Length: 255
Image 1 (cartoon, rainbow, N blue to C red):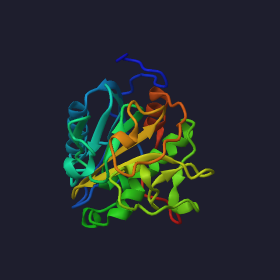
Image 2 (cartoon, rainbow, N blue to C red; image 1 turned 60 degrees about the vertical axis):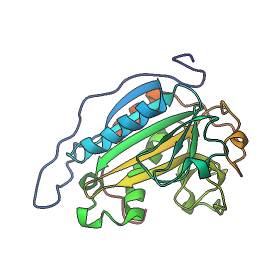
Image 3 (spheres, one colour; image 1 turned 90 degrees about the vertical axis):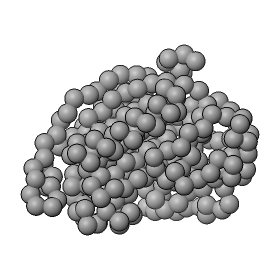
Image 4 (cartoon, rainbow, N blue to C red; image 1 turned 135 degrees about the vertical axis):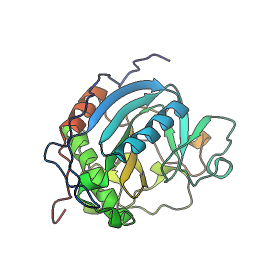
């Protein structure tokens, strides 16, 4: 597979741009905290998932990190509570890997994927509130929504639109739109599928953004798959740059 497939672009943004202070049980947000972002194209599924897991470990020590990456072919990532024999039509027919996050199965290879891990204090969330998953989710996807929109993909939470569909009986993440999904505000098309893992001190979100036609048809992978709608071109370095520019902090009141 080409290291630079159509619809993708590459670049690199790294280095730490954050500071934090410790005060009692929960550290306080610094105005200078930013996300350290790297771009890593065309890696296999096991490497991608292992590197995202490391992001969470590092975030638990106080930094905010993200990877913007692609895959070396068609892969399926399964939520950590899924089983391949139930989620996939034939687990031997496609490469698959377990994610460190939950959620439904995602078909990769035609997408840009983001792994982002942030300490809870950087989102204005106390460790005692780490079990409030909906609160954590809304806080951690806000930077992603902002970055996607700035990178040329209009995005918002589905709960702010009339486009919400029942999940039904399917393992395919893109076969439904829940209130917490990120969608195009005008069409309701799912912009990306997100999955979460929350620890007492940090959160990891993994987001898949389709940008071209799938390398394999979803109906060859899943029962009751989604109907594919072509995504927009997304430059890896542009998304990475916009993520790097996002200011972390609590979700503004009323949002």
